[in-house]
Each structure stands twice: as C-alpha cells, then as structure tokens.
Length: 367
Image (cartoon, rainbow, N blue to C red):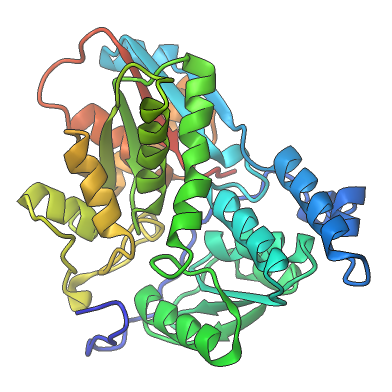
C-alpha cells in the first residue's frame, strides 16, 4: 500500500493523546521580538522579512544542549554517554527545526499558507513557525484523536481540519488540499523531504561542534524516520569533508511492534514495509512514535544498514522507566517517547559497551 492509498480498516476508538511535549517558553511572549515583528509584517519588503526571519530562526531554534550523562554511565556501564536534548527548542521538540526551515522556504517562494497533518507536536511547531513568518497554517488532525496540544495549535492561529481515522490518512488529506489549493505541503515524504533532512543535519553538526569528532553510536527515536535519516546525512557530509574520522552507527528505537522502520530492520528487509493498519493501536505513551506507514522509512532504513547500526523496540513500560531515570539522574524532563532511542541503545546492544563516546537524542520535553 502506498502513502496515497486509504486503508480499509475499521474506525478507531477515540485516542486521548496526553504524551505531547511542552513548550519551553511562552510562545506568545517570544513573538514580541523585533525580528519576529518584521518577519510577520506582510507590508514590508520580502527581502527584509526574510532577513529578519532568518535572524529569529538562528537565535531561537537549534543549538540544543549536549549533556554528559555521568550518572547514566554508572547505571549502565557506558564509558561516555551524551544526551542531545531537543526539548530545549521553543515548542519543546526537534520539530521546530524542520518547521522553521519550511516556513522560511514558503515565505521565500511566495506561499501564504502551509499545511501538514499532525497529532500534536508538529502541528504546534509548524503553526508557531508560520505565525512568526506572517503565514497561515492548516493542520489536519485525525477525528478520532484528542491531542492535548490542540488548544495550543488553535491559540497560535491555525485552522484545524478533522479528517481521517489515523495520522496516515490525515497526511493524504492534507497533501490533497495542498495540491488543490496551492498550499505549501510540509508533510513528511513529500516534495520537501530533502529540505527536511537538511534541517535535521544540523543536529549532527551540533554534535560535532561539541565532540570534535563523531561518536561511536547515535541513537534516535523513529516514527516517520526523518530525524534519524537527516542526522545520518549530516554525519556523511562531515565525513566527506574530512571533518570527522569515522561515521557513527545509527540506532533506531520505537514502540513495540508498531513502527515499520524497526520492524523492517529486524526482519532484514531491503525496503521499509507497511504494517497492517488495523493492528496498530496508540497508547497514552507511544503515539509520537507509531505509524503503519513511515513516510521516510526507506531513508532511515538505509542509514541503519549503511552505518551497521540496529533497530530495537521499546515498550511503554521501558520508556516510562527511562524518562523517570533521565529526570532523576540527569535532571532532564523528557516525554517517555523521547527515550526510545536511548532504550534501544542500552537494551538493544548484543555485548558490553567498549570505551568510547555515545549519543542518545532525546526528542521532546515534558513538564
């Protein structure tokens, strides 16, 4: 089944999604900055708006913390473990990176509206980025979902459209709307995939800036696979340019039995195969991770295979446990789904860790 086909599954029960990230600041307060005001002013010259938006983008998004997790090292026998905390982005997740990159692209190319499907976090990030650029945003949400960030999306001015029984069908609807009405399609797996991957390359560059070489392993939670694939792309670029002495192994973690990338990697498949939509169920913990179709799954699967990495499942219990440990041992407030890569790194290894450096990307903040 392709991403443009609609599955013939039965309607899902309402899913109360409560594991969304939280913003790291008052988003309405940050909008008061002078650069943001200029960027959003539709009466100003486009070049002036773009310059202001880029300045705002560079000052507020990315450059997230890379923290040495010494207590975790003692707990699990890892020589040097670093946690890349993407929760310090403005809306609380790594999604700000691709949202601001695409909002800037949309502004430059003359679009006035962006659209995407989302179950919460990405919708907030894209709506915030669009508003900062003086653009509108249309967010498609499955009508059976009740994300706790819906009010935040609405408060930032997005138009919310309820369509589809699951995320994948909402993507189809959003993409069709973009094609029909000439909106900027910010969904994964579409025409802007390369731009999205390039935005996530910055995570690799930031890790390099801190460590001055590639770590042995980089572990990342996967859903659509875009984040992991983009980070790998960044390290490949660094290696090609002679900046790093090696390429890291890429480790993917996702919800148990509910992600095509992990399933396909474990089965040794050459391409990322869809799951049966009728057997995929969200929980209060796993929703940010699961898909029956991963839009950039082939990119992520290639990265895992080329880097000689691995993929592993993370149960809801394990993710809750690791989120608690990260909070208690390292003082970082993370949503459980953000720890899937860390779980896969620690529990998916086949042998003890050799003395080296390891990085786990934590994708979202929770209060």
